Image (cartoon, rainbow, N blue to C red):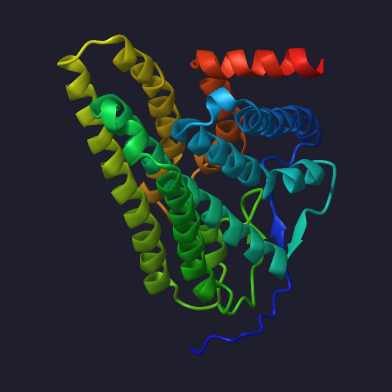
Length: 306
């Protein structure tokens, strides 16, 4: 069957998280609070890193970019989800659906690669502290950020170039609060087995390669720490626990998604909420609670303007 550039389906119906009006009203207030806290928390980290000269270092430069990605990740679908809680008909246009798929994989792919860059930064800080500023130069940091966005865009474009031309001519109900790629592909009016394998291979390989690199980096760091004890190492290591926690929060849902990528389970919606709402909210909390320098800089910023 030939794929058509024009689909019969012009909009998709989002089934959301619940059909109960009372529960939707409760979720409206809960997710409004979480979304607002996630955006404000990450913007506060960005503002703190930019304005405080003591935080003008490679680690905080990467942290500021991670916070920017988290703001984008929380915003591509959560505001619509919150608005849909108050709407009886939860629909999204075909173009809007494809846009959500594109931005989901752009931000997800970019954060995956950026976390590897942040792990490399900690590796250099702990294992090669005397060469840290030489190796982690400003140019290298910009390169890490540029590569992360380039990988995210290419990764997402690979998915979208196939999905946007699929013929959607029948069912149009997406069993989630945003257009998730596996759920949308299943609605196409043809056998999508080959395409599903391509999607799984692309996303799975990117996640697996980055996860292996992270495991190697943190393993080398832990081995190095066992044979070394110094104040500088302890300070660098104090930030490592925050990095590991963020990595687990990010890759935990991804690992579950790619174990059963095209089978629907009730827990899938919870995982989607974790990925789009809770993780962007928890990241600034983790980095501020575990990092004395960030807390001191935020306190200085508060005293300056309040």
